[in-house]
Amino acid sequence: MVNYTAIVLAAGQGKRMKAGKNKQFLMLGEQPLILHTLDVFDSDPWCEAIILVTNKEETESMDSLISTASLDTHVTIVQGGKERQDSVFEGLKVLRDEKSLVFIHDGARPFVEQEHLHSLAEVTADKGAALLAVPVTDTIKRRDGHQLETLDRSRLWAAQTPQAFRLSLIRRAHLEASAQGYGGTDDASLVERLGEAVEVVEGSYNNFKLTTPEDFDKALAYVNQRNELKGDDAMFRIGQGFDVHQLTEGRKCIIGGIEIPFEKGLLGHSDADVLLHTIADACLGAIGEGDIGKHFPDTDEAFKDADSGKLLQHVWQIVKQKGYTLGNMDCTVIAQAPKMAPYIEEIRANIAGLLDVDAGQINVKATTTEKLGFTGRQEGIASQAVVLLTKNS
Ligand SMILES: Nc1ccn([C@@H]2O[C@H](COP(=O)(O)OP(=O)(O)OP(=O)(O)O)[C@@H](O)[C@H]2O)c(=O)n1
Ligand SMILES: C[C@](O)(CO)[C@H](O)COP(=O)(O)O
Image (cartoon, rainbow, N blue to C red; front, side, top):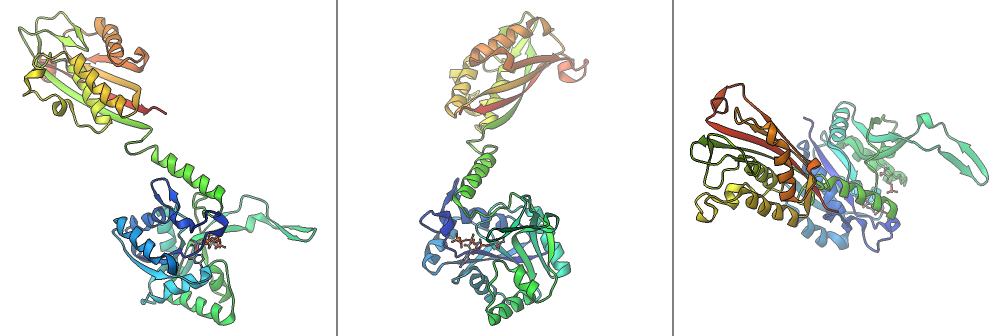
């Protein structure tokens, strides 16, 4: 582990974004742009502290934003300067340990990945200066009036941030640049001017800077796509269920809503339909709503001998209210006996009817356990199910 301090720059005006305010405060999905960027460093265990450089006029609003963000890493807010370089210099002023590593990062680059932060830290610990960059993919032309020159693309890299340095080196580079009145568009260029080597660590094209409205649209699509895979609004949710009921004489053997002729039946508070209970559990699991025990307690007389088809339909209403529908489900009945094969299609059609979906979305299969265990001894029947739910658009 190589520790570093991150200086995150947010003191610009975001003029090219044309949003009428500093782009750092624009909502990118569920939170402002700057919080996405801070989250990256907050969740990196190698990052020891964050220096957030902000506008004088925005210090208060940035401060209250941070206080609502529940970040674990300590954030010091510093007032920036007129140009980006001035803002970096203000950030450097609060650091003391000259041997430590400092990462300088644009607040407007929220998608930097942790593996690249770590590669950068390791290279910088060894070499003293490094930056993330990607090979340019366009052909680059230098234009002088009507005269064009095509540059050799094989040697061209698009510089990103973070740019990382030993503190003593980047402080010296900034002092020198300021003494000479040199203004660079990045920090590495100031170190290059000292004649010092700066290593290139290949990053990702995802680590783009949000500069124009088009960049913002691209970032929003990226964030939405990421969110589709998680949380209450996820496009897909998966759940699994498992249940067992004891086989006993004097009870009906109801599996998947179909009464199967057999010398024994399943014991339970309700009709003990092991398969429908399993499916209900898988559905509740997928939407994060616990299990059927929570919704239909076996201490409640209302559910005595209850038709499990009705219970499953109740669960399915909850699923639908949350905006989900069935992708598909796959179930296994684990029974030594009765023989399930003759009933599988009827069960499948019954479940499809209960949920008002196509039978093709449902697979039901059965297995014995080769006479092993409690199912093999015909003491009980078990079942398993996995359910994939998809969000209605
Ligand atoms: N005086 C400045 C200028 C810029 N930045 C920061 O440096 C990063 C990169 O700069 P850029 O994308 O150019 O942001 P802005 O300066 O805000 O944008 P613009 O040039 O369009 O006004 C941004 O996170 C920006 O907030 C800064 O901290 N202080
Ligand atoms: C530092 C930087 O992000 C590297 O690509 C870039 O140079 C910042 O430039 P800007 O003029 O502030 O957009």
